[in-house]
Length: 57
Image 1 (tube, rainbow, N blue to C red):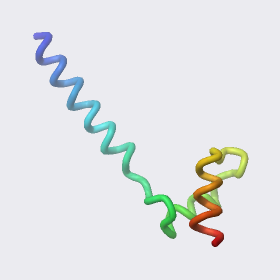
Image 2 (cartoon, helix red, strand yellow; image 1 turned 45 degrees about the vertical axis):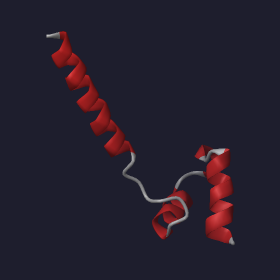
Image 3 (cartoon, rainbow, N blue to C red; image 1 turned 90 degrees about the vertical axis):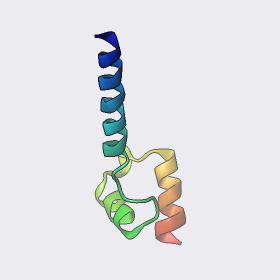
Image 4 (cartoon, helix red, strand yellow; image 1 turned 180 degrees about the vertical axis):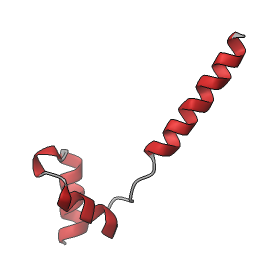
């Protein structure tokens, strides 16, 4: 029984990883559009740097 729980947990983690990775690539047109819609106060420092690098220049 415990082995089955471990397998189930591993499968759920894998599916979660796949779902979390489903987003536009940083620097793509879709990503830039999404960032323009997102409130500036919610941006991380990395997102702001990537936006400046890929969407403004």
